[in-house]
Each structure stands twice: as structure tokens, then as C-alpha cells.
Amino acid sequence: MTLARPQEAAVLSSARNHLAGTVVGIAQGGPQVRVLVDVGFALVAAVTPRSVEELGLAEGVPVVAVFKASAPHLLVGR
Image (tube, rainbow, N blue to C red; front, side, top):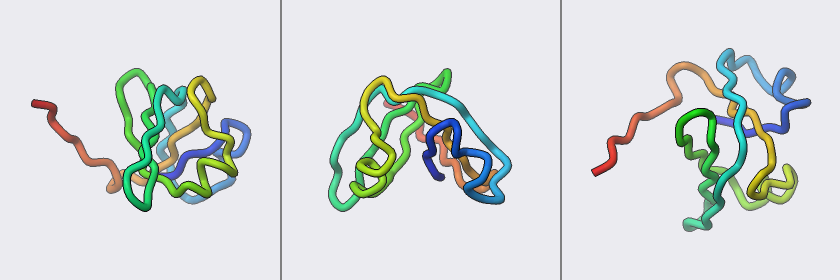
């Protein structure tokens, strides 16, 4: 999965699935940062600290999650 700013989403890859949303949380977790995105449901993307910086990710920032159909994993909460 890739996160992109809305104006960049169409040119990033051959991935066909796009979900527009808003960043609602960011948490450092080891070598990756977990970005929580509200796309109508909670979506968590694991990205690099560099990506957070380059994309200017922060709470309230609009993003588009771009992914191939085989990428998502459903995690059931307890």
C-alpha cells in the first residue's frame, strides 16, 4: 500500500484501488511509522519515517491510499 497526496495518486503505480481519506493518527513503531487513515473505516498504513516527512503527513492531512487487490489484510479487533 502506498499513501499519496490527492494530486499525486493517479501517477504513482499500476495499482487500481484508491481510497481517499484523512490522516487521524501517526505512531512510530520500530523502523516503520503506522499512519491511521479514516477512509470511512479505519485503515492503517505502515510507511517509512522519510515518507511521513516527504508527504508532510500529520493529523488532518488528506491522503489517498493506493493499493493492489492482494495487498489489504483484515484484522479483527478483540
